[in-house]
Image: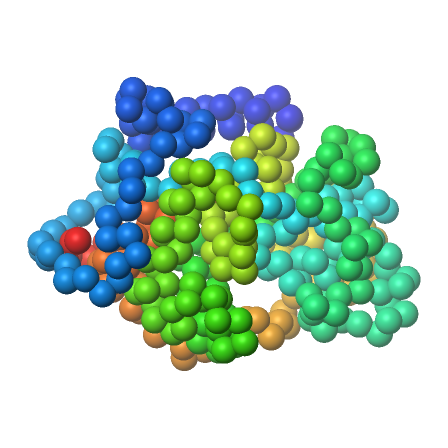
Length: 327
């Protein structure tokens, strides 16, 4: 698509989001840049008795009007992870729990195919902690990448609920990263409700006053729209949905358009059907977490408040909130 048509589309789409969520009311605009937020209810209190009211509501209405004040805003400036391939004039923005391990390996392969093959690695074996291209093609700011304006840029996104469920299952239930690092999983260990509440509070706090103490949980669960400098450069990206029906074809097509030859295409395609150690897709634990999230109104409502604008910006359908207790 012509760059100017993409810019026009982005302006129109952003305007639709703003209008749809009633962001133009004065109380919201007063703090939109700094995003003045009310203090969350029940802050630091995860065992209080809840006042319950049976209700049925539309998830689309959750962040409209005054409701937007309790929703995490989009397009905040957060940390970025870029991987480059000079031979292909290509920049990939990596978002944790969104094809990140595979994408990092793919960009390493593109960066230096000869070295990657000589190391006898596969894309699925090039795990993050022992990755071949550590600090070789990795950047945290676009401005650090020479002539980045002349390079093609893409990012991979994922259904927000799927990303959250996969992250909690992988890190908190299977790896149990909290055993070695007590603060991880928000100090909640395997308690899903505690984790949702605390991550919501951390996002809310960051949106109100961005802080420097970004931690492991933030990196794996903060909104996708906060990444990749989307706030400034969304129009320049080709955004691929990991769970889209044609994801593999779109990814390989993009790489071919940027000069990757058939031998390289076949190498990557042969690995895309394998799974990394972080994959949770067929696990019993993941199915249980997803079932709990989708059928617990309190949890689902709060997760939608966390990722509402990720759903809208990246074209995902908001899940229906079942009738049940509302806090």
